[in-house]
Image 1 (cartoon, rainbow, N blue to C red):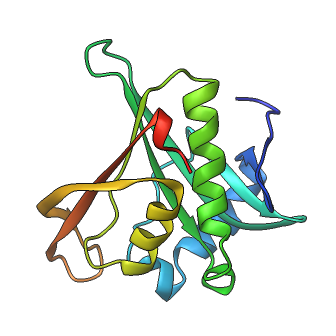
Image 2 (cartoon, rainbow, N blue to C red):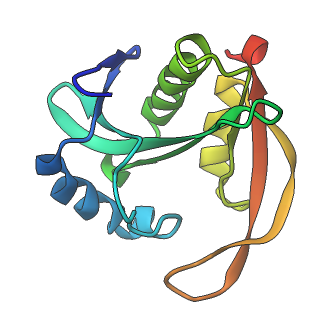
Length: 160
């Protein structure tokens, strides 16, 4: 991934550099972000999200390599100061296009918290559709409670 840039309508995605992890760690600890995210163990397979020259968040991807189940997954967080302006949608769409066109995936998944309505609405704008509720799917690192997730997927010809 070294030195690669992905350009969306407003955002630019660049592989996370060591010097940027402190900024991303600070963003993921914002109360509005921490409600849905625990701090990542590492930033492997992660792009920093830039608006102009400002880091506003990160987007990660995973890839299943088994040919019978090949697909990719996406996860994203943005600073609370920059939500509500379509930047998350632009970020997910930009990474999705790269995973489909350049990495050769036919299907993508994303799994927001079931009650995270703004994230779900954003992902729908990209073309993701709900598949089902994952009951007690993720542990809230703040409360220790198990919470539901919503599994969503997108097929290559559904990218909006």
